[in-house]
Length: 154
Image 1 (cartoon, rainbow, N blue to C red):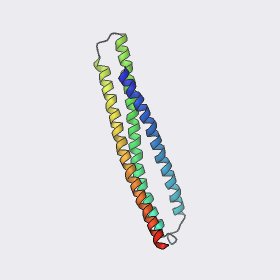
Image 2 (image 1 turned 60 degrees about the horizontal axis):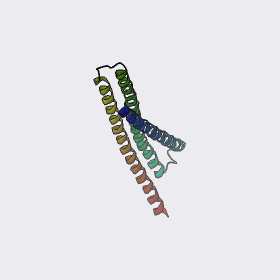
Image 3 (image 1 turned 90 degrees about the horizontal axis):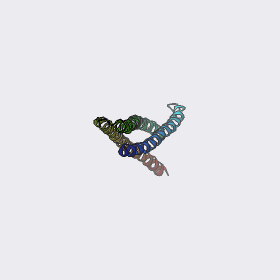
Image 4 (image 1 turned 135 degrees about the vertical axis):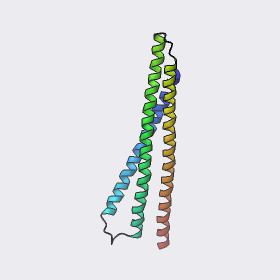
């Protein structure tokens, strides 16, 4: 009964950090929305090359954020599934001990399935973290380009 409890605690911790990551994706999306609304108020004649670049940058960032959001949702679903299966494992172990049952394979199966769901979630989080890094690298390149253009004008 101890092993599922340890995995449940780990999954709970990962759920918390994953929810925070999802919140950061939402916050970043809302920030890009404000930038897009500002650009939308401009007419085509007023748009500078920098604003055109920002428009393209926003679209690219939204693609990354969309992919990250779906990976995080998938990871959370896996984590909640994992936690449910691990709780079920603990309950089944208790029931089998209480009734002196001879079906020890049942909690073994649910525990194993819960561990696989946990592994799936961690792999999804790894994919999301990779996208977060790629997205940040694109953002850094964009900022460097803006600063290089500004420096050349000075």
